[in-house]
Image (cartoon, rainbow, N blue to C red; front, side, top):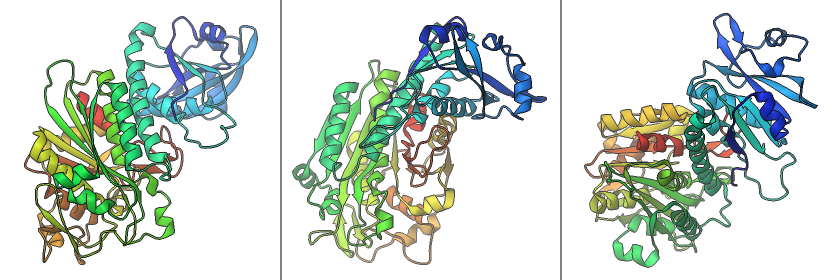
Length: 489
């Protein structure tokens, strides 16, 4: 759903801005200091019969990011809620969490005025807007998202405007990815996803090409056709293209897995395993989200986004274990497990990118393996890469964006696990090897060509079971901010 909170810069004082906006809530940052939490001298607290330090001591506050201590204060002609919110060391991650805490506390309010310490204002804005995100079908929530968040910094509103704009753009791109992934699969099929991509292209100054079933067959995209063969709703290959206004400094291809629903095909999942499978196109959603924001952020790289979209369903026409698939470019794979379908559609897109698009680097992103989730949990993506510089750049971007990655090995010893007796490669590892995330990445490497390539397995962080800081339950939009940071570097 569209982000409803509006963030604006303000000058003057917290009290004056609160009176001007008729804000119900005002907020003052509290830093974490060596001698305990440190509250600034805040004019808004001048009428209190105690000091802010006394209030913090009473509640044993520590100034940790996301921590909130509240009281009430008269500002102008009315009593308002005063929040002392922890910002830790005011690092970007701290400010992101602090902004998220304020946005959640501000639900149901029309306006909140916050003093924000020096630091990454864009991260603060991003955290606030993403924490206010909600996807709901049916009756509206009892408490709507905060209406207006007014931020005051020492530098003033003009100096802060670019950061507010940047944080808002990144949050909106992430929210778009969340919306696409959260949409139920009764509505969301490959053609629906393609139509949404076309709408984004029109709004964001992109070009778009959508290949339907006939073009896929003529082009030799056997992986997409095989995975989609069990569904009455045929596959699509979505190609979005962004060219900057100035000469591009590089050409990057982003490839996203777009499985709009994954039943497991004939290798059928149990019911509990299907409940979150509307989000199995989270990688494709991230690619669309990234492309939506590039022009607004002035990214100088040329970027092509490929989303390999299909629905993996069982039927009399579905692919069968033991089938051999001929992918784009002619390489073959033996399909031994229909629930390892994501790598089959990605293989086509990667081979096409390598053969036709002449990229300087390729990055794919996919909710690919449960093994990555077991290894790294719910906050880190597994990163595999053929190029150390690319891996290092993505790692730095992930840390800065609050979307961390952990590099995993492309171990040559495991390549034998995906040998096939009858095809060039098998789509699932043989028993005795384990390392399911690695064997999946090794499968993809067979199709990625010789240019720098990285694979982000987001099976863990692509979905969340509970709200935490800027993360909201459901699809997280993981990867959008990481890739935007990398592309803007």
